[in-house]
Structure formats: structure tokens, C-alpha cells
Length: 403
Image (cartoon, rainbow, N blue to C red):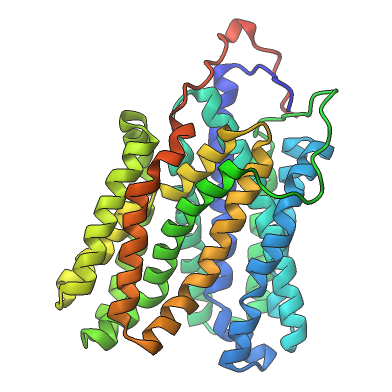
């Protein structure tokens, strides 16, 4: 992308715009997740068939994410994000319209593909804004995604409680979120490719640096997915708690992650990416040990909270490091995103399979080992600690090109 100079005020405004984009993106996910039972009944699929269908969003994202860089090169960063985000918000409607398993799988494939491409585009712009502001913002951006997901979930829970048809709910939600997304994209940075810059390939393997960074992200997302999907089951089945207390554990884990992401940037600016992830890995490892050996609901809930606290900023820092680790940020970010999406897909079934063969205690022992890996391999995020270019003073800025 060409090195357009922006005034500091423009960059700050772009930061808030990208944060709003992250919130809109998260709200789509939250809106969908709460209506999955309705979608299952409408499509007439069994639990096993639903599990198969729910693998298609990750498959669609993995296939489509490498295309995001080419789209941004062809249309420019702002126009590309505007279009890809609109595709994502409108794709929310598709799963609720599916009448059978085949159409549900196709709808979820498109849903995942649009999610993945918009994810790469907004993270690439987030990294660019972070570079120009010369301070960490990626953790806060992902915190806004979590806040958006919680908002979408709350609205979806209300709609489900009122017995609303998910088709009507999702049409209204898609309309509102599309408008909000288009408005937010008005103020993101309008980066354009340099005249002599070749377009990225349609499909290409991510650079080696992205694979290493993605491996760190894999560990964090595996712990996140395992905790989100299995913490309530662990408390209910392993520690024999009530369903309400078990659900509260999952809610607490989610809130811990969201709050930690929202305040994580100050920690990263103070201690750097590598040290932050190492300390986070220690907290997550200790939390995993409490879950495995605690034997009491309060201890286990504390363990899950510490795990959420420890892994909260890892994925944002992985995206930030990927965006600064090579000459093609979009390709590197797409590689990291593909690996983390895969981890999110694999984690719940891997935990379940291992629990079936052994026990949930052993399954969370694996989570603890992966959390420990964060401590060992945090150094691959050193790209996130490189000196960032200082933005030019306002007097050197080009005129505001916002439409």
C-alpha cells in the first residue's frame, strides 16, 4: 500500500472507526450464535448433522481469507472493507433461510467466507492504524469485537425469549448492522496500492513467520474454544455443580476476556508484546492447573477466569506481529487468521474426543500444556515490539480525503 500521510486527528478518527467495525463484526457472530437452536429446528437436522454444518463457516473462512489481500489491492482498503463487511452483515440472514442440511451447509460456507475476508481486512487496517499512532490498539479492537458479540448475543437472547422468528430477527439485525458498518467505514484509512505494486496472488502459502506466529495463536484459541464450550460441562459433570453455576462460569470467562482485551493495550505499551504474552502464559498455565487439580467449583472457576485473563490479548498481538513481520501484511494476517480459525474449529471436538477416551481432567491438562507453550514461544511475537514509524506532524499531512 502507498505511504499516504495522514494528520494525527485523521488517524485517531480512523481508530474509532475501525473499533466500530470490530464491534459490528462481533455483533453478527453474537446474533447468529443465539439462534442456532431455531436454525436447527427450521432446517430439520439432528445434533450430529448440525455439528457437521457448523464446520462449514471455518471451512469457508479458510478458503476465502487469502483472497482478502487481492480485494484490498484491487479496490483500496476502505472500499474493500466497506464491501466485505456488508457481505458479512448481510450473510447473517442466510442460515435462518436454509430448509435442509445441504442448503444450511452452503449458507454457512458463504457466511464463514464473508466473515474471514472481512476479518482479514479489518485487522490489516487495525495494524496500520496502530503503526501510525505508535501505540498498541489491537487488544482494544478485539475487546470491541467481544463487546459487539455480547451485544448481539443479548439482542438474540431477547428475540429468542420473545419467540421471534429468526428470519425476521436476522433480517432486521442485518439491516441495522449493515448501515452501522457502512457508516463506520466512511472514516477508516483509505489506503491505496502503490502504482508499481504487483497484486498479491489469489492463493499463496503464508510466510514462515506467519506460521510461527499462528502457532502461538493456535495455542491461545484452543484454550479459548475449550473453555467456552466445555467449562460449564466441566463444572456440571466433573464437579457436580448446578446448571446455573456452571453457566455462570462460562459467562465469567467471557467477561474476563472482554475486559482484559479492552484494557490490554496499556499493558502491552508498558511491557511489550513478548513479555505480556509470557506473563499471560504463566497466568493461563496456573489457571489450567487450578482447573485440573482444584477439585472445588470456586477453585475451578478461578482457574477458568485466570485462563481467560492470560490468553485474552494473545490473538490481537498475533495479528499485530503478523502485520509487521513481512512485506505483505494482508497475506501474513490471512495466514494467522486461518490457523486460529482452524484451532477454534478443532478445539471443541478434540476436547470431547479426549474426554471420551480418558476424562475431562486429562482434556484440560492438554489445555494447560498449550498455555505453557505461550511462555516458551512468546518470542516469535517480537515483531510486535519493533519500533513503529512516527507519524508526521499535522503540517505535513495531505488534505482530508474522507468522502
